Image 1 (cartoon, rainbow, N blue to C red):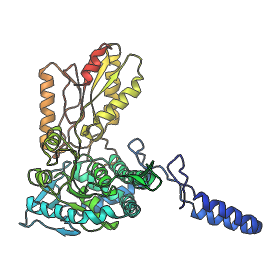
Image 2 (image 1 turned 90 degrees about the vertical axis):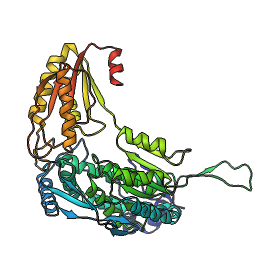
Image 3 (image 1 turned 45 degrees about the vertical axis):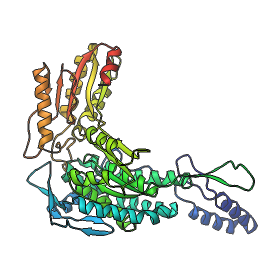
Image 4 (image 1 turned 120 degrees about the vertical axis):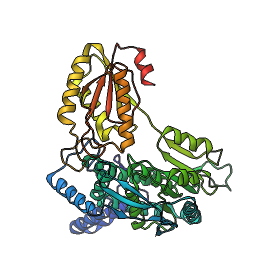
Length: 480
């Protein structure tokens, strides 16, 4: 067996046994052969991993990056209004009754992004059955073969990253920087899970044996079939995280993406299929939650659920999933996040962090900053700096434009919810200090700051500022 030494950065050096042999052979054959042997061992040593080029904290584009992105945008623009198919048991299919779901771009509702088959319970059952039939062989496949396929899928994500970023710009209104960072994050998630199962040798652990004639092991086995219900706000990264974890561990998957982001799910499906994933191991089912999602919840062939979305839906799945104990339901639900600004805070850094947190992807994420508790002594200065940052750095526009920091909210319902929250805040004595107007035919509106109001939970691009004295009250408010 070859034993690899793990480097601190997660890379691997050459097997120690091979390195030792190469050195002995080189010593015997002189300087010239030593040089050749060193070159040979250098070629055999795996490359150290490089950090991802784009992350959410590093969104610097070169001119060539901008040109490449613009080319991808032009290409996908030519593919708008396309009719796609769902994936069941390795076959791309339309709905049995021919029904389709159309989706308009949130940035410009005059643009139809896609048409997808509208699957119901019958087609979902077929997808679940395909996943069940594939589960035994996939689960028994040596983990090294599984991660070889999944690492190829990660490579394909990197190769097609610009295409995916363009898809998300039109489909969910994600600006170019956040779009490319999300694809890189998705690929890194796959690699991370592959590294984890590799480091643990497939989650097989040798235990202390009770006697000399026995061998005791702890072995983690796959559940079987997982239903993955993914959201629209991070349609590639979150879908990839839930799906790849299940697949790498030996489970098969039926994915139901959000109805607003099926093309992003199609992108993930194509990467998996093109990487060589066997038929039936991954199935893509686009359709309403009332039929597709409910079938995943109640079907006895489904062994687990991974979900990201609202609290109400997540708790419904958890409380009513068919398997009662142990209950393999992984639910990541909503959250709202305050920032606390004290008297000795770096106000420039605080203003930038608050604005980026509040207005990144129009505030449509569970990690968005929705309110700030500011010490009275610095409230005025902090508001001035926050308004300055928002007015000069948070550019609102079509998500594919270079200067755009903040694009649209997802749909008219989100606009209405956002507007109602602001109206309620104003009625309660709040005051808008910046922004607030509707911009175009899509779901674009300007960034908005309001102050002196009771904190309100809204999944949108706004920030509530509350002045206060430092006290335990901040902690109590933080938990609301």
